[in-house]
Image (cartoon, rainbow, N blue to C red; front, side, top):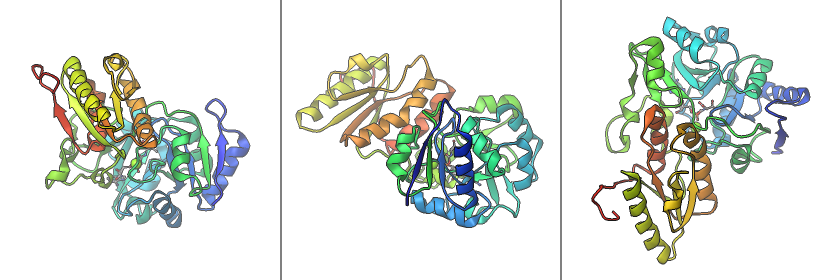
Length: 358
Ligand code: TXA
Ligand code: MG
């Protein structure tokens, strides 16, 4: 398949390019476009054949439902029923933005879009290009992250090109995703709303608007080892997995750096390639391997925004062993660690203060 690549100008698409994107969607084709969280792979959400193409292009299991992207709050009612007051309150505060709500679906939404579920995931993104395409298309664009299943979500067009060139009709380059982590998913069909995937809209932020919210237990622990099945089907797959062996080191900054240095030296001497995920504050503490800073500890947002790029980088250079610091501070830390722990297959080394080099 021939893939058209389009460059947006300063976050805006030319009129002709919007038209092309819309006409591809209308014909049941696939358009990858930027959003503020990660790039999405868009198709007509109400056309079963179109959403089936998404699964094929991504190599995604067909029981893993897609998020329907809308461009106007009013459109909720066309695709969801029993929409609660809480849903409207959240939409008013957090849309457009990185929040996805799970609601009961209306018949118009095909089961191929919802992975056979009677609920539908809905999000109204903030990115201008995304909004323009969705509204001009007519409202309902199914879009999972625009990566091949099992790879980190794309936060730049070049990531999408890496994964989907030749498999989709169009890729729109709108620059770097500002947030870099997928949207928070909240299920509003349960009595107490439940967070199915942590993201930039944190539990506290949600509770400030609608009161009690809980986490799906499965996202807080390594459910591979237990009988806890996550409610968001996608969370059960081993996502975000780099090629190399990733281990997270937890503990105070200096002992962690010391422990990582020791391992990095050991592996380097054995002729292995080593990568280190560090921060602006710590990068100078490391002496061996390929040291990458993902952002500043003073600015958690920068760490969220940098994570997937660094994971992809280590894949591209085929790093065999990757050591990462951990990022547990603050509310956003939950979302970052959720992704990082999955990428590491929950391989964590806890570094004790007194441990000499781990
Ligand atoms: O930020 C985002 O949400 C990005 C951008 C493109 O909007 N999209 C995204 O989509 O991350 P995807 O498909 O990679 O992740 C969607 C997640 C999956 O884990 C899926 O299982 C879950 O949402 N999901 C979708 N519909 C659901 C439903 N009806 N019930 C429970 N979970 C659902
Ligand atoms: Mg995804």
